[in-house]
Length: 422
Image 1 (cartoon, rainbow, N blue to C red):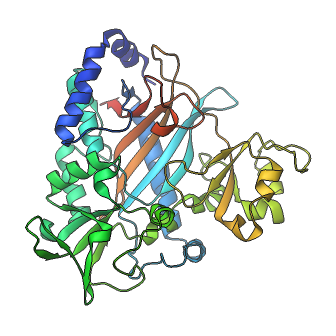
Image 2: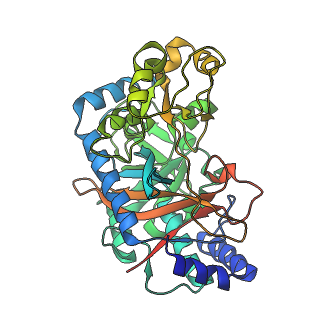
């Protein structure tokens, strides 16, 4: 981390500036922010972000080009959620990295997970801008990646989401979007791109086309869908859709739903086999392989410290248990016991993985002590275009997990942004 910028920010910090940050965000997003926003951005060397962006892109391209992997991932898609007309590649990609202290003392990034699903591409730009204005940050600090400036970013985002369609015929599709915590992002995207935010349960199907009703009640055909409806949320809420996902519709997808499953935590055991090529990928195996196969031996060979026995009370302090298809850290179990692992029915064990636990290194000096950072690289991949790292997103925390829901009641934690000199 860039200590000069950190020291300067901490010295000049005033609670009134933080209040200004929150007011600017609400004003620019048009709605209140219901999750915690950190009092500070982070200041990082550009090479760190560039390295993360390059690794994430390399791993994603390997997955997209690996037919055996894709076939296995398709077979893991829950029944009723495999959508026809899958695109050649995802339009959106996020790669999350932690910073850990290696045995030699050097800080190094480690992959937390990789997901082909959109993040808060609109809100994050407003957050970066609000940090810059509220705290009068150095004008030589930048936030956009891949050689982009802000105008380039919005142009690429428009190309990826709207493509060559009239924005009136492009919808941001979500479950009950008015009550989602990510609503500020939806409002920014609607305003900047001219698209419409639509509740997925209000869609009307006529023939092989999907429609929504505008504010005047007129039925408008949908030509392209910017999909923000998370499949596991649909499943958890038992949402009854007014159209069949598995039917072929005369519509394009900006973020085809299948990619949510195809590049997800399901990829981690496959990617961990690339450890010799990318040391950033922590060892991981499917739970079924750990209990019924050679997963234990493979983890040990990869350097994961495991207890000698496997009795019911054996605790795996160096492992995490993760459900394959969940969002925002849902269902993650730290230090699982053998009894907890075996309690998962054999038929369900293929829906979980165990991964080496990464201990985030606290690197951000704050008035409340050292704080950890998780850095997410946001990529855009327009139809027929190139995979491009565009922006980063940061979560600050001092707990086991980095999500804003897991650091309640604390200060100088929450959603943040990364700035770098250049």
